[in-house]
Length: 208
Image 1 (cartoon, rainbow, N blue to C red):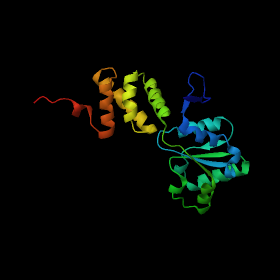
Image 2: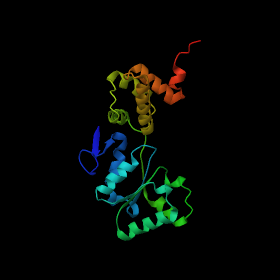
Image 3: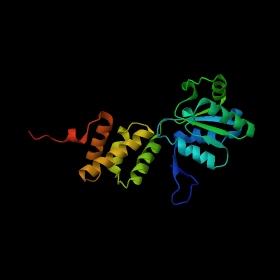
Image 4: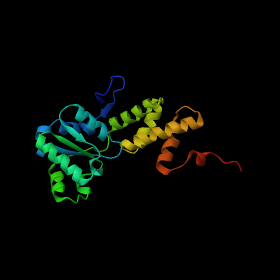
């Protein structure tokens, strides 16, 4: 598993982007700006997939500029930003949670320009990346996930970036509520809560 360090304020506070085989096409495209139509590309991906971190990495690399949350901007502002990038001859990475075809863009000129840009999509994480995401989120929370817990969780976890983060959050909360270490039993309950919405209170035995 590879980590790409983001050149932020200090080495101690630098954030990293976890990469895996599922992200190789994304970074290959980002490193090939010379092949972008009109020097523009749209990076789209699901929630919590690292789009903003990748955009910051791209911008701080000095290769070009990045425009995050582009699908939430007013269309005229986005159109102006596109034209400025063309006038300056500087590559522009447009970041969105949705592919341009689903934006329902009203401005015909903007729609045609977005449609002409290179489309880069972040897909579901591969097995190694999914495990690395779980371990990274756990480390940030100071959680110790043993090999047995990881071996139990990984085949049962939804293959998405958001699911990895949400599961670790649930494990952490249950561990704090129960004042207990993370065991396979606790991880099983966390998975059940994520999948079925079963709360910890509902899971406790009732005294009749």
